[in-house]
Length: 129
Image (cartoon, rainbow, N blue to C red; front, side, top):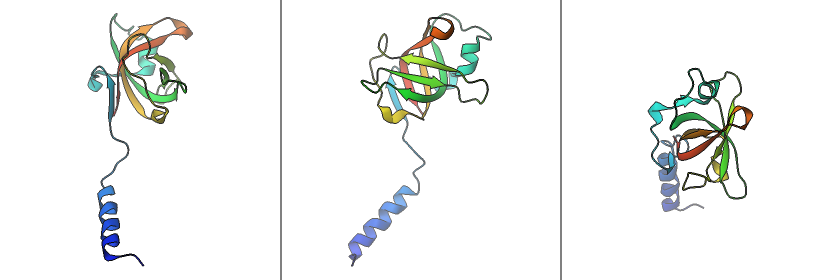
């Protein structure tokens, strides 16, 4: 038999969770201005080519380094041509990410490096809205 206190506690917790809408936003590294993000496919298509300097791009995290969280793969979520880029955290970032972020929408700030299929994004900041 559940005590009256136990019933009240369960009902209170259930009511508190009615307002829950998923996972809380997370931010890593340098501040990211989400409003200036471009979709990954647009950035990689280079139309127009990205200006030299930092970029802010949005997508969805599809893979994370399992050993230390030092990289992840960002994929385009606009529904167009499948585009992806390796986001490297080791050269510029002061953070790593847990594997639990796979599947989350992400906004990344950093610098493009490499070319063609060897293109990667050296991240400085990450926002998981």
